[in-house]
Length: 439
Image: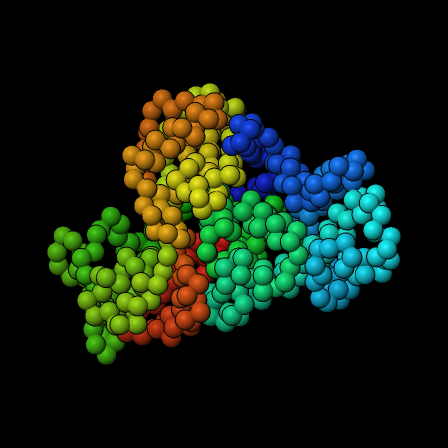
């Protein structure tokens, strides 16, 4: 028997996984809640010298930091979504006068400096909360089920274009982008500053929201794969081959089967071909690939996800470090996540996994391995650490997905029409999302 799954609670505010955020400007470490409070204080800031206004901003920021986390992650709040949405059918601009009208307050009262400075954040948050509910519970539910064959055009845009078209308030934009970045950027899905279609932000929010329970394989996916292979190999006439490079794939005309030519020579006959890898890797091997298959394979983008394993000394004894400033497009190549390799609960090892992006997703600029190493050493030094040795390094073509232009060109609908054609079927993360729960 093999244990197939194990549940653990993910808390991006640092209480469960002890995630620490590193502020690049001040070169200081802080926990997740403090980082979020600072972010909200920046968003809510009115640049006012009014003592009451500034004090209230601080209180509101701390309260809202926790509240917004609960609102977007706790399923209980779905019961009140309709009431909130019906209360305000249209979003309002985040100005004191407009929001006072929304709340049936007298605009004249808000002209008094002390009231305007003190209560403007509350009115702004009221509008922002409505917008966040509207997006999370009004758009995400449209992504039920597997795949993306029936997408609304509105979710084929970038994050910025989507939020602009949805007419959400300034504060809601900042909050939603920060929440998406907090939960997705460190995991290899890029920050909302890149031109990744917003549908994938919404999809990940649907299948793996911030916090909550997630499943992992306690013994690793390799052991799971071995268990599956053993079961298949026990079936008469079936076998699992590993470590065999493929030279070519030829599909017989008229649906008469598949012929695979491995690198060691010869041919192996199969009934069907199921492609679960990247189309850009498999289609070039297909001798008889159609023009549509070639075109679709060229419309897929991936993320150059670089993982370096190194011995590092001098860092605080925490298992995970986020560097939010390095999630932005301009910081491509910089270290944005560090994980300590844990052999036990003591976290005594100085072996770390260090994460960078090796290619700018939007510009296509490739950063050499030499430059990545130079940047990594400088980033670790700024955090107070020293790299003593590099134990390994790998570039992963991660998160295969169509870009905005391909989505608008009905990428998924076109691929769906090819299912079963010439005994060829398409599966894997490209058709849904690069995550175990989705694939």
